[in-house]
Amino acid sequence: MKEIPEIPLVMQATTMEAEREIGFKWADASVGRRSKIGGKPDLVQDGCRQVCKSCGSEMTFYAQIDSVGDEVCLADVGMVYVFVCFDCFTSESFVQSA
Ligand SMILES: [Zn+2]
Figure (cartoon, helix red, strand yellow):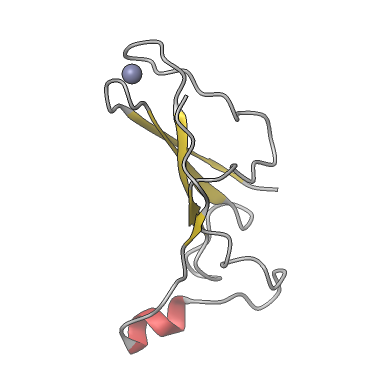
């Protein structure tokens, strides 16, 4: 299984409309700042080892994408986790929240 070094992703609004969507009134300060490519997934439930449904190879953790704000929130301030098979380039994603 390939492992990608951790590369943090920073949310940056490019319009006023987008700026209004970023941020949470009540969530922890880290929420909204957990997006990254590579490294280890910050999973709250099991699911770290993903097997490719197309070829059976172990999939690589590719990225996690955080909730954006109170209006664009994934379940209970959850994240989308993305895994990629580097043998056949199938991808799989799911949402987890605390
Ligand atoms: Zn595959």
